[in-house]
Image (cartoon, rainbow, N blue to C red; front, side, top):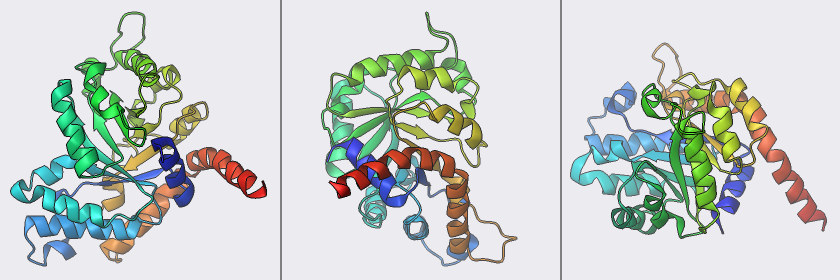
Length: 293
């Protein structure tokens, strides 16, 4: 199954474009888990597995932030494997690695994330040029989400500045990736921050068929209303990632952390319903048409 079909199936099966971020940040772990006397590695596994259990029916994808696993040291890949084993089939698995190196080095990263660990997609930095992305674009069942317009304030240092005839460097990158994607079997998508609503319109328009990975909703405060308006004209299916917003623990809430995660997931799905519905409608029509024929 190619990546586009996997993505469609994941969104159709879960009825949402919500993506859960798995960030085992020590400070985010609720007291009820910290009190168990677990090692850092055991805590990361327990935190992620319980988060997966409470979100598995309400998300289409999981984005695994590799940095928080690497920070565990020699246990990193054992912990990562334990976490990946807990994710049910049919979900899109994204390695949030943000790698970006010369092609022969990126070829080894490709072996690690796609061939060894089995991720469907990976986040990459395109700032050393399109040739650095090519090792990841040889498999039709895999995808790259290239950093195009990120949600952090520092994006203003580089990404949002004018570039040649383009209003921003991000718009130029999108146009360049649109051309690159036509010549390779793998899927090339974009990371677009929801906090950049003032300028992301032309970036999306420059590569309207790109699947999108959209951070910035939730703790960073990106507007879902603004996002929904721009996505009406975007063909590629988005995944809207929420990490801290799903895993947040409210000590004033009488419910357990796990119940709070379930509630958070429901709330974000309601918030994203206009976007999810927009992309689900053609998938449902297609499925109904296939059943009738």
